[in-house]
Length: 200
Image (cartoon, rainbow, N blue to C red):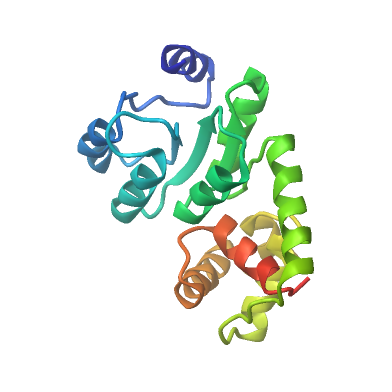
Protein backbone atom coordinates (compact mmCIF):
# COMPACT_ATOMS: atom_id res chain seq x y z
CA UNK A 1 0.00 0.00 0.00
CA UNK A 2 2.82 2.39 0.85
CA UNK A 3 4.50 1.65 -2.49
CA UNK A 4 1.25 2.30 -4.38
CA UNK A 5 0.77 5.55 -2.50
CA UNK A 6 4.32 6.65 -3.32
CA UNK A 7 3.67 6.03 -7.03
CA UNK A 8 0.34 7.86 -6.89
CA UNK A 9 1.86 10.96 -5.28
CA UNK A 10 4.88 10.91 -7.58
CA UNK A 11 2.54 11.12 -10.59
CA UNK A 12 0.96 14.40 -9.42
CA UNK A 13 2.58 17.44 -11.03
CA UNK A 14 1.81 19.70 -8.06
CA UNK A 15 3.02 17.23 -5.39
CA UNK A 16 6.53 16.62 -4.10
CA UNK A 17 7.09 13.37 -2.22
CA UNK A 18 9.36 14.00 0.77
CA UNK A 19 9.64 10.34 1.66
CA UNK A 20 7.84 7.26 2.97
CA UNK A 21 8.52 5.22 6.08
CA UNK A 22 7.29 1.96 7.58
CA UNK A 23 6.99 3.13 11.16
CA UNK A 24 6.25 6.24 13.20
CA UNK A 25 9.71 6.13 14.72
CA UNK A 26 11.36 6.24 11.28
CA UNK A 27 9.11 9.10 10.19
CA UNK A 28 9.86 11.09 13.34
CA UNK A 29 13.58 10.75 12.76
CA UNK A 30 13.31 12.25 9.27
CA UNK A 31 10.35 14.63 9.17
CA UNK A 32 11.70 17.34 11.49
CA UNK A 33 14.21 18.25 8.79
CA UNK A 34 11.86 17.85 5.81
CA UNK A 35 8.91 19.93 7.13
CA UNK A 36 6.19 18.56 4.79
CA UNK A 37 2.91 20.42 4.26
CA UNK A 38 0.87 17.21 4.55
CA UNK A 39 1.63 13.92 6.31
CA UNK A 40 -0.37 10.79 5.37
CA UNK A 41 -0.55 8.36 8.29
CA UNK A 42 -1.80 4.80 8.70
CA UNK A 43 -3.20 3.92 12.15
CA UNK A 44 -1.77 0.39 12.27
CA UNK A 45 1.98 0.84 12.53
CA UNK A 46 4.72 -1.27 14.09
CA UNK A 47 5.89 0.45 17.26
CA UNK A 48 3.97 3.59 18.15
CA UNK A 49 0.39 3.82 16.88
CA UNK A 50 -0.75 6.17 14.14
CA UNK A 51 -2.51 8.35 16.71
CA UNK A 52 0.65 8.67 18.82
CA UNK A 53 2.64 9.31 15.66
CA UNK A 54 0.35 12.24 14.79
CA UNK A 55 0.69 13.68 18.30
CA UNK A 56 4.47 13.41 18.22
CA UNK A 57 4.92 14.84 14.72
CA UNK A 58 2.44 17.69 15.25
CA UNK A 59 4.44 18.74 18.30
CA UNK A 60 7.54 19.33 16.15
CA UNK A 61 5.69 20.35 12.94
CA UNK A 62 2.69 22.44 14.03
CA UNK A 63 2.25 23.75 10.49
CA UNK A 64 1.75 20.33 8.91
CA UNK A 65 -1.66 18.83 8.12
CA UNK A 66 -2.34 15.15 8.84
CA UNK A 67 -4.50 12.83 6.74
CA UNK A 68 -5.26 9.36 8.08
CA UNK A 69 -5.44 6.64 5.41
CA UNK A 70 -6.57 3.40 6.99
CA UNK A 71 -8.93 0.41 6.86
CA UNK A 72 -10.48 1.30 10.23
CA UNK A 73 -13.96 2.79 10.10
CA UNK A 74 -15.17 2.22 13.64
CA UNK A 75 -16.16 5.32 15.60
CA UNK A 76 -13.60 4.81 18.38
CA UNK A 77 -10.61 4.87 16.01
CA UNK A 78 -12.04 7.74 13.97
CA UNK A 79 -12.53 10.01 16.97
CA UNK A 80 -9.24 8.92 18.52
CA UNK A 81 -7.41 10.00 15.35
CA UNK A 82 -9.29 13.30 15.09
CA UNK A 83 -8.59 14.07 18.74
CA UNK A 84 -4.92 13.27 18.17
CA UNK A 85 -4.82 16.07 15.59
CA UNK A 86 -5.76 14.46 12.26
CA UNK A 87 -7.19 16.96 9.78
CA UNK A 88 -8.82 14.31 7.60
CA UNK A 89 -9.74 10.63 7.58
CA UNK A 90 -9.83 8.53 4.40
CA UNK A 91 -10.34 4.82 3.90
CA UNK A 92 -7.80 2.73 1.98
CA UNK A 93 -10.50 1.55 -0.39
CA UNK A 94 -11.06 5.12 -1.60
CA UNK A 95 -10.43 5.80 -5.31
CA UNK A 96 -7.06 7.34 -6.17
CA UNK A 97 -8.72 10.62 -7.15
CA UNK A 98 -10.34 10.86 -3.70
CA UNK A 99 -6.99 10.32 -1.96
CA UNK A 100 -5.29 12.96 -4.14
CA UNK A 101 -8.09 15.49 -3.61
CA UNK A 102 -8.04 14.73 0.12
CA UNK A 103 -4.34 15.56 0.35
CA UNK A 104 -4.95 18.76 -1.63
CA UNK A 105 -7.87 19.71 0.62
CA UNK A 106 -5.80 19.18 3.77
CA UNK A 107 -3.07 21.39 2.32
CA UNK A 108 -5.66 24.15 1.76
CA UNK A 109 -6.84 23.89 5.35
CA UNK A 110 -9.78 21.58 4.70
CA UNK A 111 -10.86 18.41 6.50
CA UNK A 112 -11.27 15.60 3.96
CA UNK A 113 -13.47 12.73 5.16
CA UNK A 114 -14.56 9.63 3.29
CA UNK A 115 -18.37 9.69 2.86
CA UNK A 116 -18.75 6.77 5.28
CA UNK A 117 -16.72 8.59 7.92
CA UNK A 118 -18.58 11.88 7.45
CA UNK A 119 -21.90 10.08 7.96
CA UNK A 120 -20.53 8.39 11.09
CA UNK A 121 -19.40 11.71 12.57
CA UNK A 122 -22.81 13.29 11.96
CA UNK A 123 -24.66 10.31 13.49
CA UNK A 124 -22.37 10.30 16.51
CA UNK A 125 -23.06 13.95 17.28
CA UNK A 126 -26.78 13.51 16.77
CA UNK A 127 -26.79 10.58 19.18
CA UNK A 128 -24.59 12.37 21.70
CA UNK A 129 -26.89 15.36 21.57
CA UNK A 130 -29.80 13.13 22.62
CA UNK A 131 -27.96 11.41 25.44
CA UNK A 132 -26.15 14.19 27.29
CA UNK A 133 -26.32 17.94 27.72
CA UNK A 134 -23.86 20.01 25.67
CA UNK A 135 -20.48 20.83 27.16
CA UNK A 136 -20.06 24.63 27.38
CA UNK A 137 -17.18 26.22 25.52
CA UNK A 138 -14.59 28.37 27.25
CA UNK A 139 -14.99 32.11 26.79
CA UNK A 140 -14.59 32.95 23.10
CA UNK A 141 -14.71 36.41 21.56
CA UNK A 142 -17.56 37.21 19.14
CA UNK A 143 -15.08 37.10 16.24
CA UNK A 144 -13.71 33.71 17.32
CA UNK A 145 -17.26 32.35 17.45
CA UNK A 146 -17.97 33.79 14.00
CA UNK A 147 -14.96 31.98 12.58
CA UNK A 148 -15.90 28.68 14.23
CA UNK A 149 -19.48 29.00 12.96
CA UNK A 150 -18.23 29.40 9.38
CA UNK A 151 -15.75 26.52 9.71
CA UNK A 152 -18.54 24.33 11.08
CA UNK A 153 -20.45 24.86 7.82
CA UNK A 154 -17.55 23.31 5.92
CA UNK A 155 -15.65 26.46 4.95
CA UNK A 156 -11.85 26.40 4.95
CA UNK A 157 -9.97 29.26 6.68
CA UNK A 158 -9.36 31.17 3.42
CA UNK A 159 -13.08 31.11 2.63
CA UNK A 160 -13.92 32.26 6.16
CA UNK A 161 -11.43 35.11 5.80
CA UNK A 162 -13.07 36.24 2.56
CA UNK A 163 -16.56 35.99 4.06
CA UNK A 164 -15.54 38.14 7.05
CA UNK A 165 -13.42 40.56 4.99
CA UNK A 166 -10.31 39.60 6.94
CA UNK A 167 -6.88 38.57 5.77
CA UNK A 168 -6.01 34.89 5.82
CA UNK A 169 -3.18 35.66 8.27
CA UNK A 170 -5.64 37.33 10.66
CA UNK A 171 -7.92 34.29 10.60
CA UNK A 172 -4.93 32.02 11.23
CA UNK A 173 -4.04 34.16 14.27
CA UNK A 174 -7.60 33.83 15.56
CA UNK A 175 -7.44 30.07 15.00
CA UNK A 176 -4.27 29.83 17.10
CA UNK A 177 -6.10 31.61 19.93
CA UNK A 178 -9.10 29.29 19.52
CA UNK A 179 -6.86 26.20 19.63
CA UNK A 180 -5.27 27.43 22.87
CA UNK A 181 -8.61 28.18 24.51
CA UNK A 182 -10.19 24.87 23.48
CA UNK A 183 -7.00 22.85 24.15
CA UNK A 184 -7.05 21.31 20.66
CA UNK A 185 -4.42 20.83 17.95
CA UNK A 186 -6.36 21.09 14.71
CA UNK A 187 -9.21 22.84 12.93
CA UNK A 188 -11.13 19.56 12.74
CA UNK A 189 -10.90 19.05 16.49
CA UNK A 190 -11.93 22.67 17.13
CA UNK A 191 -15.04 22.27 14.97
CA UNK A 192 -15.89 18.97 16.68
CA UNK A 193 -15.56 20.68 20.06
CA UNK A 194 -17.75 23.55 18.83
CA UNK A 195 -20.46 21.13 17.66
CA UNK A 196 -20.18 19.09 20.83
CA UNK A 197 -21.02 22.22 22.79
CA UNK A 198 -24.33 22.45 20.94
CA UNK A 199 -23.40 25.74 19.31
CA UNK A 200 -25.15 24.88 16.04
